[in-house]
Length: 510
Image (tube, rainbow, N blue to C red; front, side, top):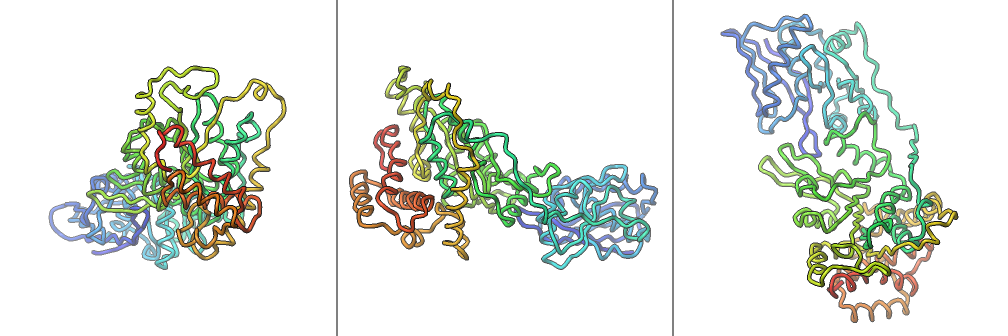
């Protein structure tokens, strides 16, 4: 006897259709599982056997061959437990008719309970594209499965519930679609809490308005981490496409935690002891790393020089291209990594170089070694360089509230709306992602601004990348002011955010 059912698999960010076939034949009892399964898939034989018996069904006493096709793609994880069980029950005549109209995904416990799996959202997106309209998913993934229109996802708690649903005895209600419900994020932090640091606040406003990367340099306790943690409160709201893309990454990584959709921009803050692989992604199953989990959001790297050099260098491709390519023995994947990097660091090992009141105790050689931990190519990819100075007592003790995040966000939203119209239909979302051709087209300077930039380029020995970045920063500053052209004052302000490497990095070219 023979039966087959539909299922789905995941590799990287892409899902693929899977067919689970079962053949029952004569001979000595044996249960073979083929189709390039990994160890977790092979172990499903014991889970399926126990589930069938403990749910009151008869496990066939015959030669059982289950093929998970296509056979040239390695199958990983316990997502195929449920379709394997359904195929065996169908082949042995214990399954009601109608199973062929569904796709099945889910891990099984020994008593027949269906447990949640990773990657449900990209699987459902692929199923909809392939014309699969009905799919049985674990109840634990119900929120995530409710996001899409055009497909009916039925959340099941156990095998008996699936059998009753297919037979029509007790139909499972499909997942409710919450897309019409607008979700607003209520942050517990606000820029109004920050005393002083107007220059740093302005720099982060520019960073948020144009999607620029930023590094903050200053002594301990000046508020660098405090400022960075408040950046998400002024970022523009995510579009549905951005939410969907980010949710797919979190679904694959198993970090949904019962959420239907990632509605707020991610803020990832890995510890400086993180490995290069954990930051970039990879491993046996090629899962996304911290860089990809920060997609469409913020990656905050505190104590930036203390990160391993290989870890910092892994930022090069995502900062430049907005994607990260991972190649391992098991295959190659490309994950989106459109991030805003916010880095924070001290100016020297003791932290007090340049402090107006505390003397630095580091030797020149120690300071140079410390700053050289950040390579020129990585520093060159960071748009805004900001010095965060110590706050005076009068500012700290003042009862006057600073400007709230809500007001700053209004200016950021207006600037992003200008950029949205400017780049409509190009796939570019902000000034920081402009191509060189776009930079030339949209960063138009008046005569005074052009002469200032020319003099600065020749005097400071800028690189071509730094030149483009200054133009993009100036374009963002002009957008914040609603100016069509880039004027002299915009260039002056943009140039001041590219001067710290001359102070701290021994006069290296910017």
